[in-house]
Image 1: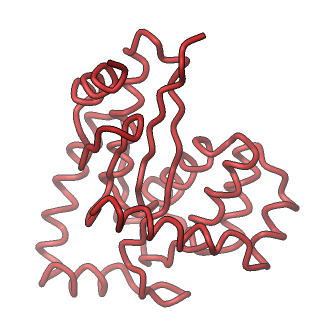
Image 2 (image 1 turned 90 degrees about the vertical axis):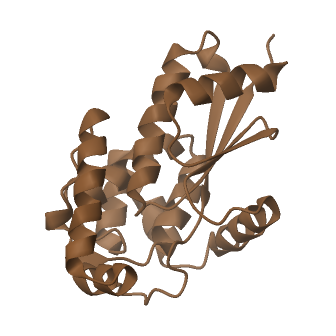
Length: 212
């Protein structure tokens, strides 16, 4: 029996390039001759580790980060164009707040325990980027969990406790060890690191190299 090929993805659920990177990784896996061997694991990275629990106005946050709202809109337009090529409809105009992502990352961790991590990650990306919902909201996260096939009560219990907080710390330890300063970042078979939303061909090359 062939050995599994692992892909560890370090990302944040409010990173549009992480969503684009997910689509490109999926294309590479679909084109890989041993696609059933590929196991993808998602790890947390907080783009805004000091974000208030309730988040802040996206316009305020982006203006502060990029110097002006006009510059933010220019960058959004570029992401929208690339997203369209990947079948993603970014609707930044629907997003009122930039959220704290700790609970979303905890939900991704919990999903790994129930075998539906990819479905939860996909639902979080779509809920935030396409539907414009607040993914720091407990109600939104429970709805995401339910949609992905998780038990709703299990998600509710996790969100009212500190379960999974160690995953945030472990994720920080992982990306610091690897020298990761931006996301998405992909580690193929614990051998090859790829930074950014690489093209499918780059992933395929890494898959083949890591198996030799």
